[in-house]
Image 1 (cartoon, rainbow, N blue to C red):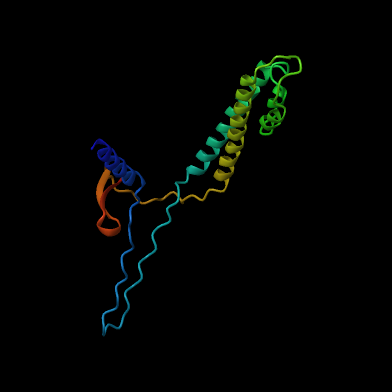
Image 2 (cartoon, rainbow, N blue to C red):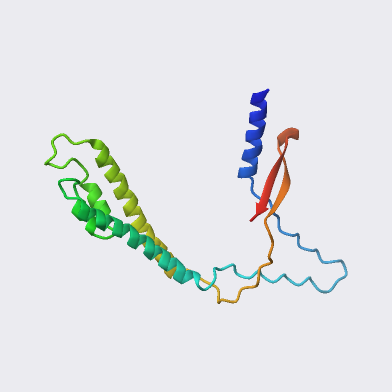
Length: 183
């Protein structure tokens, strides 16, 4: 009995989490017989573009991510020596440094009995640092090519969060209930 309750709860939660709103377009009105004029086409909706300040904000966010990641790698390169970690000096090179250091991952020649754990942790941190540096450059590029609105946007209605129950029908009489909402 408890298993059925858990399965029902799990299916209900999964339908709630995975359901998407099924919104259809309004049907076009057919011209009435004998009418000489066709209905006027609806005006296209305004372009949903980010505000004008989003371009500079995106560029600053990408530059901040790149500089912070490079700063952490640079600080690490001065704290460690090549005897501690192979490729530590490579971290002083922006963007490519973590990847060059990753290529030299291994036990230092001065340590005959080295543990693999610090080497693996260092390699993982190199990959994370390299991804953040390259990702920051990608965000900068996105900011450079971002289309923004002219600044005049229509005011949005102040609505609070809205949650709505939506029925679902499945094959052969199966039914369910899902939740959709806006926040």
